[in-house]
Length: 146
Image (cartoon, rainbow, N blue to C red; front, top):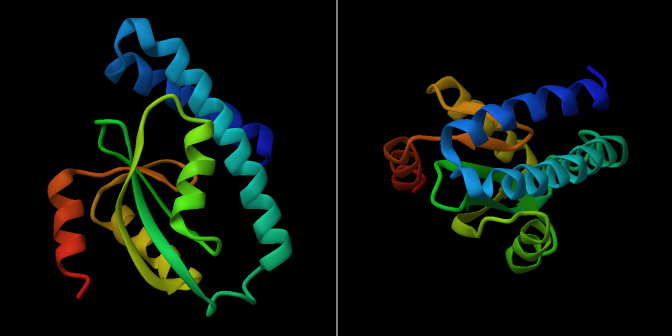
């Protein structure tokens, strides 16, 4: 799938989400912010894959779960530069307040496994590392980490 196809698919999904969840007065702002974010995320994703490939999968990273506004939309990702800087970078392209739900030390491989776990329990992958996760599923996962 090309970046163009991913963007097109993602924008269609965002319009659906916006129509279902965002108040009418905020729909344009929500869509614009998230589309900007998606473009940045896709570019970063392809750059990281090209640069890192699989050779850094065992490096220690900070894995995070970030929530978008009051929605059940969560980003599961990792940072090598620290969660404060990562949150700041993500917030720039998002009109809704982002908040850190959980951080754990792990590897890139483990971060990818977390994605698979949420997909297998029925959470919907919105685009990239963004998921729609039921609060009770997220709580169960966090409570069973240790």
